[in-house]
Image (cartoon, one colour):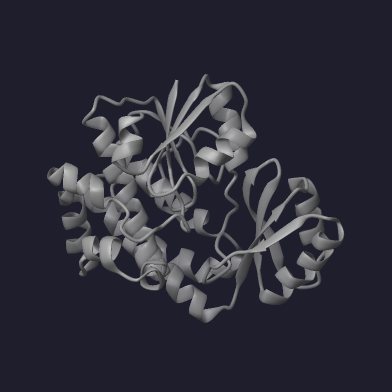
Amino acid sequence: MTISLFSGQGSQSSGMGADLVEAMPELAKIYDTGSEILGRDLREICHSAPIEELSRTINAQPAIMANSIICLEAARSKGFTFSGVAGHSLGEYAAMYASGMVNLSDAFTLIKARAEAMEEATKQSVGTMAAIMKIAPEKVEEICSSAKNYVAAVNFNSPVQTVIAGTPEGVAEVSEIFAGLKARVAPLKVAGAFHSKLMQSAADKFYETAKNIKFSAPDVKYYSNVTGGELTDFSDMASLLAKHIVSPVRFTSELAAMQADGADTFVEFGPGKVLTGLVKKTLSDVTAKNVSDCSTLEAL
């Protein structure tokens, strides 16, 4: 079984998607749809904006989603098919589009609302994140739960990589403990404490847009960051997606669930190959590859 995976925030790069759109001009309609909904030139942001501007949450989220969808549609034009989807954080929005749960316009409407709400939340409450490596996720959770200042494990990326988020004081407090345990601590260049309770105002604001979107049952298996497994109840996606903003990304659990369901091939669509690496670190006896440009498309 083949699974399509979709990249998360932080994977953006200047010029992403340019060669695919040049080779397949019909894919530019994805940028056009996004630009109309965002009210600014998405293609220009992706291909020409300085990395500092591209990396702003308000730009990075729609830009990464657009390029993930471009990579997917390029592969589909070559006959690529799949039986399930999953995304990492904002990657879930490209996954919803890929699964047929939402159309392209609604996907951009959702990601616009999400990006704007999250960027606003980072200005209201100061937060930060760090990746903790070479230590078990359970130990990361235990240490975070005992901290005096707020910090939580928020991204379960692989058996040896867990991302934490919280107040600067909380992240600094536990980072010192992790360093003492010989774990590797890598501060992340992010604007806020994503997937933590510090994003609650963003979740509340985003819900007001999401509740007006029509969600259809997907055409393929859809795996959720929130549940860590296949999602089968799509009756209140607006609430689930709002919860997603303040809930941990249980990616390792998703990968285990997909493999248990028979998945043996994982293809990541979008800039970079972070998820491809996480698959290889987490699962054995599977094939993992990425599509981010013309050369990787040809190797699919």
